[in-house]
Length: 423
Image (tube, rainbow, N blue to C red; front, side, top):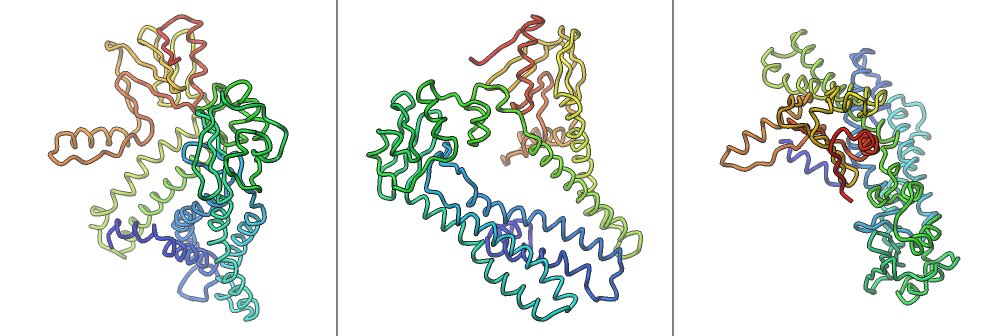
């Protein structure tokens, strides 16, 4: 089976669900297996392999569940502020998911140890009852709740999706009247009463007060509103809105750490198999380069992610711009042509005669060479894109979540280089 076929099969929910359950059972079944040929080290290695492979499949499987259970939801480019509540369905969905996980783990343990037939039967029945609920209830409850209509917010105004059969409409913020203190949008906004929303549609916590402020002052969410209502950070003019959260950062570190460890484990397994005579040496030449290259690409990125927390992604000093994110160090003011901020993306551009920036990310360098080679090829194939942060010969880019755009005020006060802003 080629990788494309495997990817296609894992994209099918039944196949992915079966693989998730299989790996879940193996987590506890392998350590307590009565196979005498498996030693303690072999069991540990097998569990680690199951966890590493299972984590990817579990994440892919649970992403659909979380998408259907999560509130508030997205409505295209808008964010839902009012809909029909479905508290009981969400509680039952999460409870069923917990039962599926616990019964799956206990099933592997009970089946491997043969402790109790009654307990094994109870585990199987719990699993068979909870699995359909966890699989179907989130999507069905979402479909049922959406049938009553929704109210969503975007910079263009309030988007009204009436009950099934009506036509969507958008009310600009400047056209909204006074927002009355009511639990439902139809009771708060006279313009919404004729839109055909269901009677059970209710404002989500904190949304009515936010809509009242936006109707009176214009749509400019505060950082607290953006975080609590899950609005796009770019919709707010507050600089603190787009700062990356601690959860995002540690999520990235966990992913990079997992990927690095997986590549190192695979490389070590190949070397061990060759050293013990389990396989021929040519397997290292044929396949061994891939996990070693993965370690070479991922390990520096992991260290960079860990290091960037101790130092800000960049600093402003009397001598120049100090870059930590890309590892460039001090860039003297005399070598900087401009510092540009556009939609809170920051770009530091050096003069043409300044020393060239060196992209220290091996993945980026390989990708640039691949794209240059593809540009000369008669067959046009898209490149992989920048795998970390694309550093140009004379450009240093910083994303909004780095918060570097807040340093530009200090650069302006120093008046040491040209500052460009997208106003």
